[in-house]
Amino acid sequence: MSALAPSQSTAEETFLKLLPVIERIVAFVTRRHHASAEERDEFGSFVNERLIDNDYGIIRKFEGRSTIEAFLGTVLSNLFLDFRDREWGKWRPSARAKREGDVAMLLERYLSRDGASFDYACDVLASHHGVTLERAELERIAGLLSIRLRRRTESEEVLANIAGPDTADRAVLDAERLALWDRVLAVVATERARLAPQDAAIVAMRFEDGMQVSEIAAILRIESKSLYRRLNKLMKQLRQALEAAGFEAALIRDLLNEG
Image (cartoon, rainbow, N blue to C red; front, top):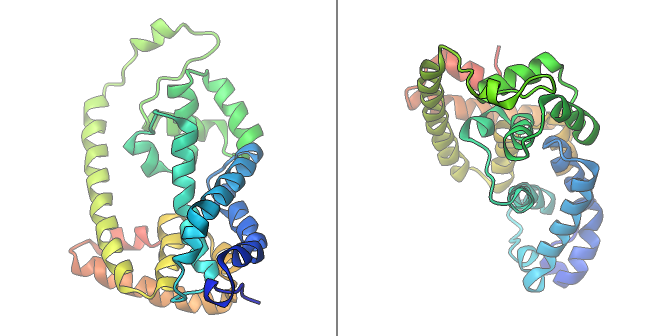
């Protein structure tokens, strides 16, 4: 049963009825971003505070053009970015770390911001954030981020002088990839603006947040089989838009995870 919209009750009553939905979405969002259990609880409190602010101003903005679950899914995904900015302070992950995803941002946070050893960072990612990647894969990610790994048996001064022979070439390649990704996101943003609110939320969760269909279905309370058909139609629209923008077919297949 879908939660009541604000027009059917006061904003405060609606908020109270939505608490189970909010908790469920908080769990999905934090798990997707590899947040620790402590961060999950803190984010839950942060969300409730923001939803209560200004006499439940966010809830009162809901106009009923999609389900309240879809609306909150988008709102909470955006709030998590604000939450992470607040928690991480003035430090910001690099553009490449953002492109590589949440594990890369966490790894860069511990190695670059906190100055932790690679061994310690691996331990914390596993114990606090539920990251199950092999050590070799984490080393590969650190290499992509141009992070010089500090070992307990090596001095920082020695490692500071180590530079790969392909550093300049890799920097150029990374810049080209980021520029390409910016162009892709611009096309996606244009297409999302043309979609119904719930369809736009589905595209954002799937394409930009990388959520599984089962996760999206649970948040929006849509039958998975029905969502697959709907998602296929939306991906076809995105494919056509990317083709019209001049992107190569092979790249589009890779972007949309098509075989």
